[in-house]
Image 1 (cartoon, rainbow, N blue to C red):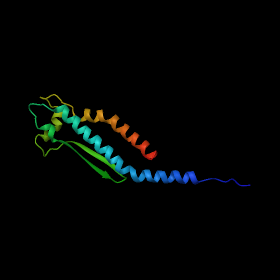
Image 2: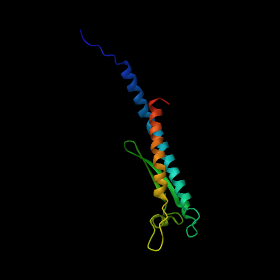
Image 3: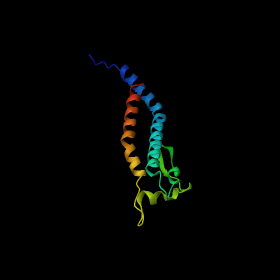
Image 4: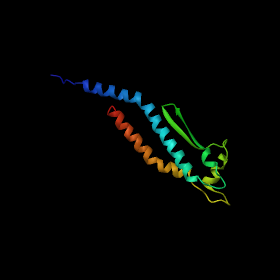
Length: 130
């Protein structure tokens, strides 16, 4: 007498996982874009009101792109082509005559746990079919 293995549930689960993989890239892109936006806004708020660099906060922008995989990447920081955008490194890290005004790194650090939680929540929602 041989063993009989029922594969119906396994095939349904495989189908559900396939659906998750189809939906995941667009949803992950949204999480990355939201995190990039939040980092940008936080960094801007940390350097607003500088008398010597009033336009600098408005030079901070972000761009997201998809790499192979799919992998999503966000680049966040001052645009050197915008007014006062070239001051980014000087403000973030300081110089011999200027104290640092960290704003990009602290903004990214503040967003990191929220970003990780958003990805975890998304994974749960996708696996639950929501």
